[in-house]
Length: 203
Length: 120
Image (tube, rainbow over all chains, first blue to last red):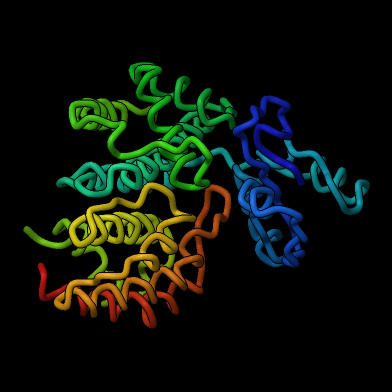
């Protein structure tokens, strides 16, 4: 299944390709190193997939809602999609991401690790946003839209910085973000904004 | 000044003491972040470069020729840990859970934590 911005047709040249594979782990052959770098696989064996299906995983709901079948039995997939029921209580996930974000903001973890710190903050804040919105039956899977929807107090410039750091750290794009691009005053401001957002996130 | 920020190092130590707890949930999230942050802080302090991309940090570390004598054990343990850290990077959608993480903690993280300890 193709998911993410490529499936939503909102991808830019910098976007990577997100593929979910069920019961299939053989890597594809890539002609160029850049191609390998830009494809992210999320693999499930059949047992894990069935477990997530039975538990009404929000991520599977995402896959069913926005995904495009690249290979496999389309009729079987349609039946799975029709019978899937997403869970409605995400309190555990919200609490987990909130706890992790509090851990990240404690101390000075950004010293000597600016981009990893920002990348992990971005990922956890995005997950907190997606789960918090789903708790209110709002299903948003685009990270930028989820961050804006869940944390209206978070400025666009901060969202841009977080996403840019995350993309840079995870994928090493040609124009990557350097720690020298991020002044300490930005980090301090962002930490206050993130702390405020976590405290006031929808519960 | 410690080689790794105190709270970050404490998380790595806790993972070594209780690998099973740190193989899933928010603890696994903290472990993944603590490892990324610690590896960046180590290279920053010893070689003056931070980890700016996950895919390139290992090759950049391997390219370093002059390793100060006192940090040789730390760097050797870090290289070994980075070589097997892929298991932490595996994405499971919004839910992370990975039994291979236990193997990583026992075989690669434990020696790294031991090597860092004298510099904390």
